[in-house]
Amino acid sequence: MDTLAFDGPGPWILFLPLIWAAVVITVVTALRRTVSRGRPWAAGRPSLGGGHGSPAEAGPIAVLGRRFASGEIDEDEYWRRLSVLDEQFGPAAEAARGRRR
Image (cartoon, rainbow, N blue to C red; front, side):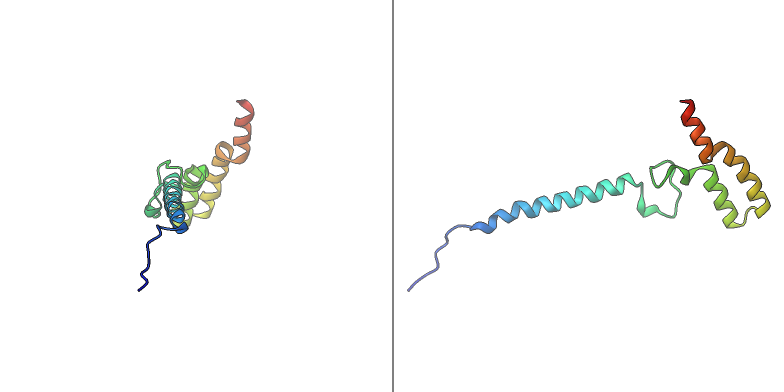
């Protein structure tokens, strides 16, 4: 009677380290993306400089836009305040600050 002999693990054993490497790389990539973007599970709450989104997202112009969108200020006040803020925080002001450095 012939019995099956165990000849060792075979070449498929080489895939085990590759599978673990893929798992580790996936976990590390997911953690790095999650941490670098702030706390995505708290998307409804504003981040306080947590590196989430662009720098203008937490700036005064964005706050003014949110206030206008929520109805706290009317259109005339929005445009009046935007013109003042644009002088201090707008793209032209950023370029001027870059030239002074």
